Picture 1 (cartoon, rainbow, N blue to C red):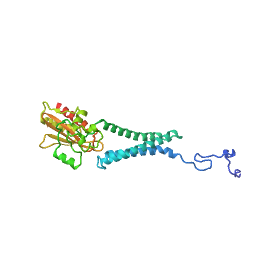
Picture 2: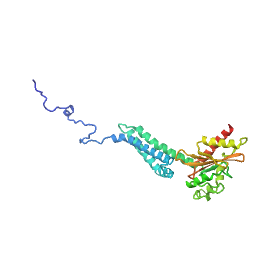
Picture 3: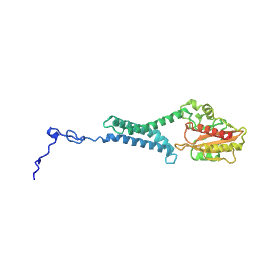
Picture 4: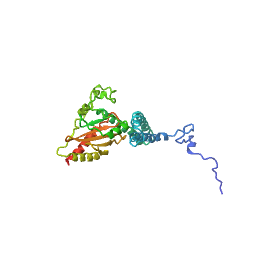
Amino acid sequence: MQDNENTGPVERPDDIAGETTHTPDQTETGIAAPPREWRRSLPKWALWLSLGVLLWFALAAFGPKFGLIDWRTGLGFMIRDAGIILLGAAALFAVLAFLFAFFKTPRGPWWKAALAFAIPAVLFLGLLSMRAQAEAVPPIHDVSTDLRDPPTFSAETMALRERLEANPVNDYGIPLGQLPMWEGSDNEALKAKNHADIIAEEYDDLQPIILGSASEEQAYDAILAAMGEIGLQDIRRVEGSNTIEGVAETFAFGFKDDVVARVADGQIDLRSVSRVGVSDLGYNAERVEDLREAIIDRLGS
């Protein structure tokens, strides 16, 4: 048997050349270099942050609807106050994550960072849209087709509104500046107008429904069916009166508005009043118009 003659250390080609091979995670001094995984993880964490902000806004918008939080907390603190800060932080983190992922080598999952930026951007655009909508409509929350003698709510509904500390149902002839809700406004021109003035100027298409050949009973049937068609709840004909009432609830926040329809003098008049908030973003006028068209369709058929 022959003994193995290569008993000494094995020389590698690069050792022969006098060079030392380095692994990618070592420096010239032999100390491990900082890993680059944190850069690749930035888009993932940016996306998680944006999803957290989306969940925050969802809780703010739908928490009041299901009784989890008060609407003032959702709309005031969570969206108006803290929400803007969270949107800015999430967008900034997403931009930084995108820059590190897209322009550094090796390139990371930049699309996650792009999606992380899109979420707060869309939410912010939604807030801007709401603000523009609020500025485009008059800051009132009570709309009717009869400006001289708007339909009145039943004693039961008024007692409920009082228990809930809802907005007062105001007299259409009193200037807004004399009402507590608007007396602190800086808009002197607005304060000089009453509800009738504002509705006539801004919602002149909201007119009573003339019965014509339709009977009052047909009118009541059409109103009941139309209220259900547009999604009102707690619809009921008020006993001993010529009115029908219902309750509308907004998709977000669960704001409730009281709606009443009155049949008298050969016509139908409608009214919708919010329980909370100064401005209704035009929802009451839109609801009255939708209800009006639904009733006309029923009477016409």
